[in-house]
Length: 383
Image 1: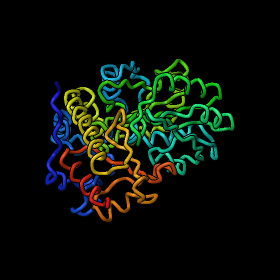
Image 2: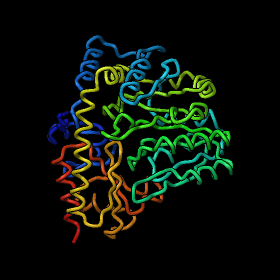
Image 3: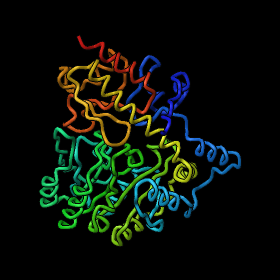
């Protein structure tokens, strides 16, 4: 049995200078932005220290081992046979999204997003000069799923592409192979494109099967692009390295037509860290997943006991919890009161779309003692 990874003590965490720990005063517990609170995986730390020791801080070369490293990781961890020749890099997933949208749309074209969803899925359209077509997720007692009929209708009325979040942020939903296969067929029927953000896929929980979009059906390879990174699983966002993956000939031609400058912006430290993560990070990642599995269950229990009326369905992947606090009558944006009165920073629900009214997103990629303290502070507001 894998021993769960322990988070760093809060005294160490407060010495960090990244957004999560530097944005708010020390009396605030930060459970918002998607950074985690664990020690860097030793193979990654060793690779970065070695790079600094040899002064290897220059430009990223056009060819590195990262595509082969990712292909090995994808085969082992995700059952995905990736052709390294169809893998390129950029500095982060959203830069890849913006460049792909520019490549497959014209200014003013509509692009489907599925709220509640990662806020940059709304913001990226200013950069890509596209427009949002909203097709919200469907909610059932068992979880969340794509509204395939709504997506079909949006494509039928002119939408040219869709931003897929799989696993979905903030709900943690891992979309089924059947749903993804039908999505691919719908897109092909309408001559549309699917850009799939799969950055949380390495964090799929034990017992859950993740389906990479490009493998869901033969049609998916012909209409799809996948973007991913080691950054969420291994807490490397500041190292600026993401991967763009294709499987079909037409998407590959489009990806190769993106300006070279997009790949040139990849950080060499991100490449070093990504190779170390994908080649040697499995044991650390297994320990992290064991901790996150415990934490999502702990959070569910804490909410049940201390915030009666809160609705939370633990997700299938990641370390982000989508929690409905509407029953507490704390308004459309309960995160504001929680920050002001409980001194806990959560992501406001409405940044994920109108469907987020009354909701918060909680980052549980931390130690259980911090989760307990945070929910205890919030629970004290219930009176």
